[in-house]
Amino acid sequence: MEELKLKVLELLKEDARRTPDLVATMLGVDVDEVRRAIKEMEADHIIVKYATVVNWSKVDDEKVTALIEVQITPERGRGFDAIAERIYLHPEVKSVYLMSGAYDLLVEIEGKNLKEVASFVSGKLSPIESVLSTKTHFILKKYKQDGIIFEDHVEDFRMHISP
Image (tube, rainbow, N blue to C red; front, top):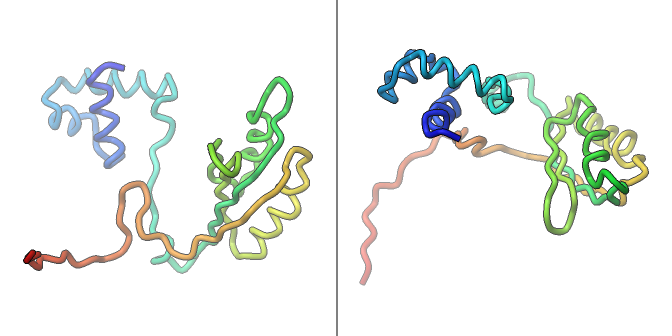
């Protein structure tokens, strides 16, 4: 991938609200080059969506998020892809990752409450024929997401003195 596109991606990842004009100024290039690069990356599905990171703990409408470790038996001819697709098509599923290690898929889901998440696991995920086991982890608090720190923190400016 050409260097301009990589630089544009980095700037938009930091802040998707940056306009092509601002990105062009920051990179010292012509705005038409930036617009063309963005349009090409959108057409190639490199840029898939412009999203906002929300600190839900500061909103009355809190959500319950769970990470589910899923062990599966891959399907002949399609491997893990077919099962992953069956899982990610559910609207409550936010992310699905193929993993190495002790489990095969990591599934992130969101629900209104613990009961809704538990119902998804027991009623929709576990009954899938290829699913061997699940292990659900509820997220209690998010400290940092996508490089963004949610907590107010005070920098420690004390000097370290070694003997």
